[in-house]
Length: 119
Image 1 (cartoon, helix red, strand yellow):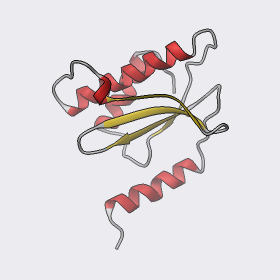
Image 2: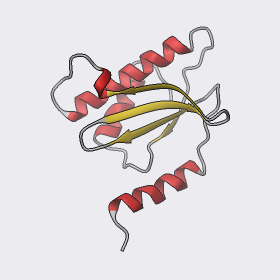
Image 3: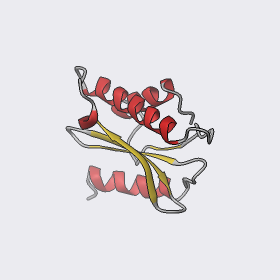
Image 4: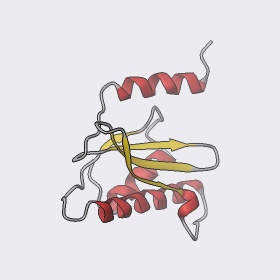
């Protein structure tokens, strides 16, 4: 019998077969655990992480995991804009890593969109 983690890994592999990040359009990948949420922009051609952010970097955490996820989205978008100054890179490919698009994943994506990332 397949458990939840194995199902998510199967979905993630299926998604990753179709999504590739480049230097111009990096892959916006998310990982969430029960306590924390992590996000990174990845250039798959060079196998390099360009920018990363997580909830431990935020000084003043808001109440609730969904609000924290939104702040992480804003933080990674701000870091991406700082990194890509002059290169006009605002577009990313969203990789939800096999998670359903609701709750914290949706909130993180909305926060990144509000701060200027397009996907």
